[in-house]
Length: 486
Ligand SMILES: Cc1ncc(COP(=O)(O)O)c(C=O)c1O
Image (cartoon, rainbow, N blue to C red; front, side):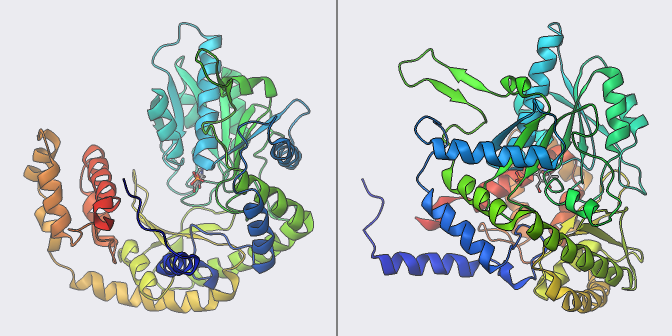
């Protein structure tokens, strides 16, 4: 028996401060992914609300009717925001992935009800669709059919989607926008196909749902992507990204509230309480929900318009600055404030991301896929604006440094990989020792986190997907190994 000796409040605080200091300083405006900074006053409002409800539970609305009311009110706001009809429904989830999974779950069970003889269900999506949908397919036993996006626009065409649909298809996914390149799929054209074929269309507006309507209001040419488009059955929308609320809040919206029964789970055949779950979580966190309610009300349309106005100006500056860097260009036609750039002179884009990281700017390297180039992802939030000039200067330096780095790289860990090794990993009963050897070769022996990631991504890229996934999974197992803290 032991969870450790009691510590004083001061000792606990020191530990928490150290934990914070170990992470990236996203409030500096130099982190262009993961965190979305609303500014000091909104943070204060959110944190107070979060703390007030940290111990409440949205599992049982009869015990915590206040949280039920927050959920209803946020739901109503989001449905108005995205032009939903009267009979629409909205449920709070823990994040984008849960909302996306519930959209797929609803579509699957709806199809099973309509088509009782349906076997081997399929999900149609594109290679820019977020992995949350692959996860849903994996969890719910659905085969994924991937449509390649157009190599210039980075969006799928409705024709390609139509060609991928068959009698086993349970849903089609469109993104508004895609995470990787910030490109909005042609939702109207895709919805027309789905209506003709009576297929459920889920629009993933996890990143775009909150601000795209404001961008349109401010004159940006944002195509229709929400419930104003007939045929859109469900939408995932995150508040913990561009709604600027603390982490842990997303909503799954249904055009027809009756369809929520497909995602709901109830159970009474046991000795305990009556089990009714709206989402995948059972106990649902009160803190994030209350904080989201507080932030939406405190910021309001005026605040989100103001944030959007600044983000639009910042995005234009950012894109112009990136395009002006010799050897770089923007990929696709991003309509929001998430962009991806690629190199036009053969320099490894992933090395550019590493070089930016060494200059204090956190971006995400993205491995190329199915004919699309490797890119570097930049998610811009309203707190990044003040760093854009410094960003562009660092980007010029990073390109120069990356050229030198790439020219000086020979062999290294990538020399270890040959057909024999790949074959061995694919067929070995237990590939763990070989994978361990690879980790050691690239300097990740003791669950250490990598400083430069390009070499590792490029190494991974040389393996077939199945082995790549196994290596990633083993790596995750390594870094989450609690024995390092025992
Ligand atoms: C388009 C899109 N969908 C879904 C998700 C998953 O969201 P979460 O990380 O909140 O689970 C993301 C996350 O970045 C996303 O960008």
